[in-house]
Image 1 (cartoon, one colour):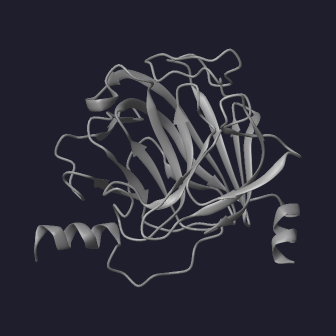
Image 2 (cartoon, rainbow, N blue to C red):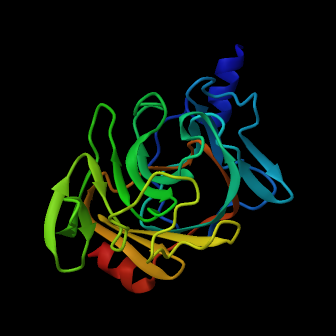
Length: 266
């Protein structure tokens, strides 16, 4: 049996496709001890990680950012509250050297690994970047994920989430979180005047609530972005390595409230 086949089997990628899981209780995806719920995909080395881009250090997941790629869940999920607790490290790499620290949480991932630019799953990204955490980015491969967001148009002509604003549907590009600085610059350590993200070195709590076709991004207790009519509305979860060092201490799924579940059941 080839090494590649062994890796594919270990990742569960050769098994028959199963329905997306709707959590009925807490699911701990990272517990500080192992990454058994995930598999690696890197642009250059695919299912292997010779540089240890993803490693566990002192019960924390360290993502070095040195190579572009991610860890993706072996299972697909739907209708959940995802919590990721993270903080920035100091290192930046490659064409992101000296630029705003960048990562992301991809939800509703589907299609082949590396379908988007040879790196990501086709997905909806809950962005993690200095000054822009909470943005939605539509990550396309052969198919184009889409969603609708209520928006206002900023002085920079970009779209920003505003509850009750003009509904806009997109299958590419970005919807900015509500208070993203219109003067944002792609520089290391960037902070906007209204940032909800904490200072580098402090822990952030990112909650991504997937409720049917609705997606809500909540950062440190503040709802920063919200979309509806998401397509697809289920799939894998992928945590990015994108040129910046990140530490993560918690990744877990919780079921939606009973009220949400009653609505989903119709």
